[in-house]
Image (cartoon, rainbow, N blue to C red):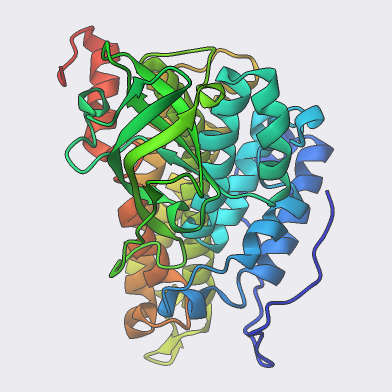
Length: 406
């Protein structure tokens, strides 16, 4: 993995140093390989150098730093599990999880950019695409030359993607695509979109839609209080002519996009834990430094209770992620197992962010610390790619055999 040394043009002279070190109360590092640790060290250094010094400014200005896309490509953050012959990293799923954990420790929006590219754009092209599609698109996406997005959610169909109305018709030498998608990460800057739409028989297929195709537009979503350093928008298709060779040929039906979501949700389970660990470490240091009643607030029972509960939940989530990563590597992980991890770890991260904010007192709402930004970001993460409640129902269906959402 290469390293990046160039600094953004808006670099400031007196930037706050990122001194983060991860908690490891149960010595989970001993379960990792030397390659895993090397990957973590490399991406952590990258985050400390390229994201941490600037993220508060980007979030305050609701600015997506497009230059990070190329840098992510150079560091190997895009498609790490995709084979090297297509530009990917050829790494295992624990490596992928570590990458997402370290990036989201920096910011959830930055992790969204990377995980959408790898799990929701490159993964379906690799898994369901033709060899020609793989060779055409994957190297450009892996390198960061191109940015992609994933079009599934619609204005009226979020948790019920099977109800989508976006559709395409066979016009002989091309398909004619119509419809709209909403809440799409990367959309405003994307060079291509993997779009899920129904054919004339109502069967769901994936199509690759490239920027520049007539009738295809990507209006940006403004006014977000969450994921402010991430680009979010819509995908609008007004009689878009899509070449027939842009249809993903190797799988159709709702199961295809749901497989992509499994991969992405796995990355979120690791990523959310990164945000939780950042909040915990910030609170732990603050509790040791902040003096009240002539002693550090870390000496008070209620603060120790908060820190103890944070570390307990982090440790449980670390073990959960490691075991799930092992199952992913063995090809044994189920949708329900991935849902459990995504739901649990995001909820844990939200609770830790809120408790950490209290330990920081009034300072916790300022950009001096990462807490409030993480908290706002996680309010999106708990909803996207399966809401908290939907994941409970996925698990409930697994337990009872009775689907509560259909």
